[in-house]
Amino acid sequence: MKGLKTMNSDINNESGLYFFCGQVSTHNWKEIMPGLAVKSLVVDEEKHSVEFIMKVNKSWEPGWHRHLCETSLLVIEGSIFNRGTKNIYSPDDFFYQEYSNTHVEEMGDNGLMAYVSMRGKSDTLVEFFGKNREIRGTMGVSHFS
Image (cartoon, rainbow, N blue to C red; front, side):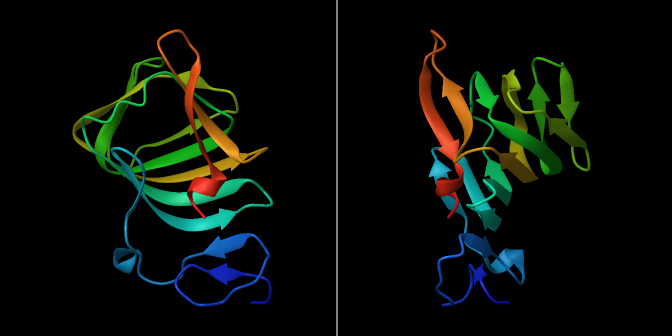
């Protein structure tokens, strides 16, 4: 496929689109922040979108954060509690978060593994807030490349 980069080969070009083909189980976990590891599946820098498998331990607390993207999440293992909606999502549950959604989540006792798709308007996909609602960190497309 011309213009595409696979994450499991030596193809090297400047298209900004990376994808993983094959058994995801053979792909290494990459910790992009303490307590949050991912297996990138598709990274499209031009369209500011990523698809990945996410694994977080039960103690990971993202705190208040805002999605600067549309987010779709399908729970594979474990659970996640959204304090705003008061919903608990367990294996096979799916949810969608619209652009600019701000919320707090808690991981279940066994942590969480989920398939996630994020589609943004810039490299920054999520802003994490401190106690005074100041931005204390971000997560972007570049974290996945």
